[in-house]
Image (tube, rainbow, N blue to C red; front, top):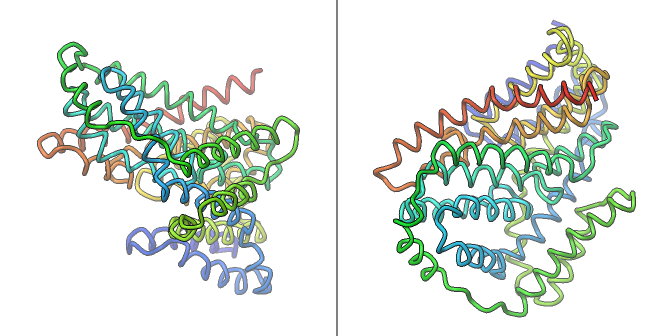
Amino acid sequence: MSPPVVAIAIFILVFAIATLRDVHLGILMFPAACAVGVTLAGMPLREVVSGFPISIMVLLTGVTYFFGIAHANGTIERLIEAGLARAGARPVALPFVFFLLSTAIASMGSPQASLVLAPVGMPVARRSGVDPVLMAIAINAGIATGGYAPTSLFGIVSYRVAREAGIDLGPFTVFIIAAVANLLLLLAAFVLFGRANAASTRPAAASIAVAVPGRRLERSHVWTIVCMIGLVASVIGCAVAGVEPDIGVLAFAFGAILTLIDPSFGTPAFARIDWSTVFVVGGIVTFVGVLQKMGSVDLLGQSAMQIGTPLVAAFVICATAGLVSAFASTTGILAALVPLAVPLAMSGGVSAWGLISALSVCAAIVDISPYSTTGATLVASTPQDERSRVRALTMRWGMSMVLVGPLAFTLMLLALRGS
């Protein structure tokens, strides 16, 4: 085999070993990248190491530090309570409330942060008469939406990698597409599973409202909410002004303001910096940089083009993203597949920003699968007597998304090509 093909095989092997042995992917991927770069690509070690994405590291650490303060000072909990209190008397609205709550929390740095809603949402669904499958889909849809905000991990990876490849992808583009796609999926799930009778469940819903009383906002909460609004407004302002926003630097700036206002929350916020994801993304991007240097990425792009028409190739790439992500890290899959899809995106056969958006969303909508972290947490939070049913139906839903998502987005790419 040629060195580019051997490098690709090693890349896939490292993924497989990390998954089967439950070892941190980034810890394996980084030294593997160095070994392949030096031995197969003939690159100096310093050049391989320089491929570690410092800009992405600043983004991830800055965002997770800022929202770590919001968690530490209790602002996130207050926002959850406010949302639940407002929807307590309307059980039919509960899935949509949890969709909005999980979207909001997932947009605050780490998509997995929304899993704090699982132990709340699944029992609430039981007491209010809402089908727990519908609630699980609602929470996952929110995670798969908020995760693509420009202030969250999925969005950071997709946006940054695409921009570095020269693809004109706006910071809010994937977020908007993810929001539309997941809201449509939630509406479809509501038609299938939304059998709750609002009248019969009103007493139970009222008890939910009583169980989640509103607490007054303290000074730290008010300042945190102001800084959240300021962060989002800054990103929007930069985008409108045609300036590429450095969200990591902005997050560190607003985090510094909150730390100065109340230094006691600065230290616990450091514990919430998502170093694990930093090194997963860093290791993968470093290895992909070696693959690009060796011509492996171009080789894969050419192979994808030989599958058939660009639309068929796009379908295969999106389906691959969904299938692998149903069992593995969504962030890792995005860091690996977005660069590998760049040759196809730049070929002109499909919309470049449309393909990256499709690939990104297809990798997240399958996370309801009980084989993923999100799906497993939702199943584990379900009352015991309903757990087997929820596990079976979320597995069917997640596996169906492996095909439904790519089919729908292939039609979107067809429409974009014709426009």
